[in-house]
Length: 139
Image (cartoon, rainbow, N blue to C red; front, side):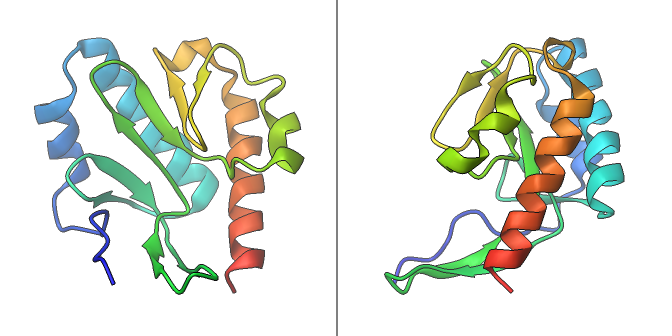
């Protein structure tokens, strides 16, 4: 079975942001996201793989037998956009995106240009709903 690439590391999240974020806006947004996600999740930021800042974790196992550990909520200040890992991607949770603001959607990843493009209260609701889902599904 393949080993997961995205595992928790000992790299300092603040040092990562300072060395990786390519604009002052992305650096500020990253620090604001750390504060927001820390408040919502109750967890300290941890690096997952080389570029993802995650909060908390859960253990999953798919019907295929693939299993691993992943952050409950996370983000990455990538070059083209900030990637938010805070959504299940399920159709029954689509309504949680209605009032979020300006973003692009991947499979279960939300891409934003800057934090002010989205409603932070709606992001908090989205993160809480995602964590509730993950914790109930992967007890």
